[in-house]
Amino acid sequence: MTNYFRSNVDAMASYVPGDQPQRGTQIIKLNSNENPYPPSPAALAVLQNIDGEWLRRYPEPFGGEFRQAISQVLGVPSDWIIVGNGSDELLNLVIRACAEPGRKVVYPMPTYVLYRTLVQIQAADIAEIDYSEDYSLPLKELIAINGSVTFIASPNSPSGHTVPTEDLRELASQLSGVLVIDEAYVDFAQENALALIKEYENVIVIRTLSKGYSLAGLRLGFGIANPKLLHGLFKVKDSYNIDAIACAVGTAAITDQAYKNACAAKIKASRIKLATDLKQLGFRVWDSQTNFLLVQPPQGNAEYLYQKLKEQRILVRYFQQPGLDDKLRITIGTEEQNQVLVKALTYLLKSMDF
Image 1 (cartoon, helix red, strand yellow):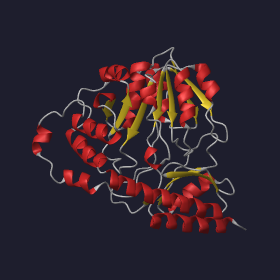
Image 2 (cartoon, one colour):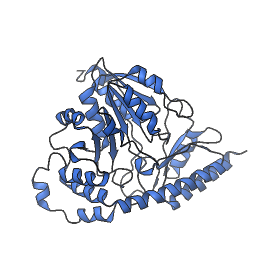
Image 3 (cartoon, one colour):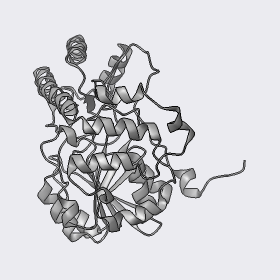
Image 4 (tube, one colour):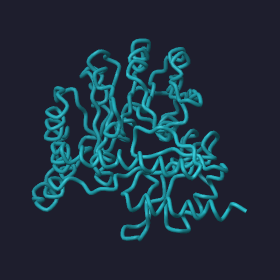
């Protein structure tokens, strides 16, 4: 058989997302950290008024309308913003622009496993540093490696913790490569690292509309950094990477901060309640600054519970990897969904209590 692929691509494993059932399937889906509430009514109104001319012509190549909206909401100049087809594309742009064989990309583990996949595609060197059990940032190790790219997800998945801004500031000041601060879950957190982009030329903060804005299906994200850093990323992006509809819908969504904040507040309140309920069932629950919880069942039988919940049409996330194979990651749903989950877990745990 002919081998069509580069040796590194042939050897690597694919990124495996959580189960994505077909639309219309009656299921409680708590496995992909999607927002349980609908997008902003303002965003939905844009979809109802699509002009066919938007589809006939190529879109504005830099997402100009969306960049201006981000600029106004966050108070940063529009030329400090790059727009991507989801934040995943922006992560990929950084790797394509900055990584190659012989150059190291470093990140603490466990974290978003797509980082590994993107680096393997580029055949760059990977340095994975284990988090300690309390998820404190391994600063000395990260600084010592001084990678061409360092990824820090804050808040982090699957742990849910936020890295203190002071730790990120120290890291940025000591690195000669690019520091990527992935803030996909920032809308559910108490702090963010946006100020660091003005302090350090090598820092890029990446965000998405998938989580806080309920637009995971739209695929729209953005990065904020010094124009000197963005200059290289613009060189490697696709010519028209943001479609016109996504740009228009995203502009309406990010402008409606009141709606986004109200949904985030409901999720944070539900997060507290669900954590309390699970602790009462004997789960260990890690503190979270996200729209999900990392939990350890009282008997460590995470895979068993994952499968049994799936049989009851309740999806949660299970990672079959060291350090996580006795844990579950559970997205915060609506109050009704959360209570169905708690009821199902209560029954499963009692049925095991011989």
